[in-house]
Image (cartoon, rainbow, N blue to C red; front, side, top):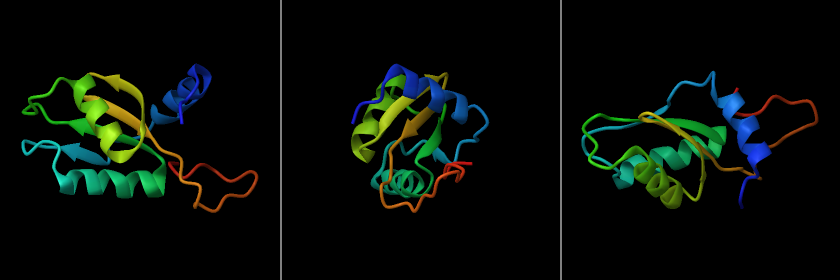
Length: 102
């Protein structure tokens, strides 16, 4: 699944108002953190991740690792904040419903 530029732009606009719900601390990219990210993506689809200042990896590299581990797509990286997206086809949707991240 690869997002088009237009889809990424729309997701970036949606993510602007979101707060980070996953925080990477000094322990780095642990199994527990990946599980938390997986849970967040399953329920919200669009998730912001805040990278701690003590994380050794550069932000883009950490974003790529998180996306690979969680089978998600990197929407954007701004500073130490990463936005990831993974569609969940199991979420019940009806026409006119708000997206799960709102």
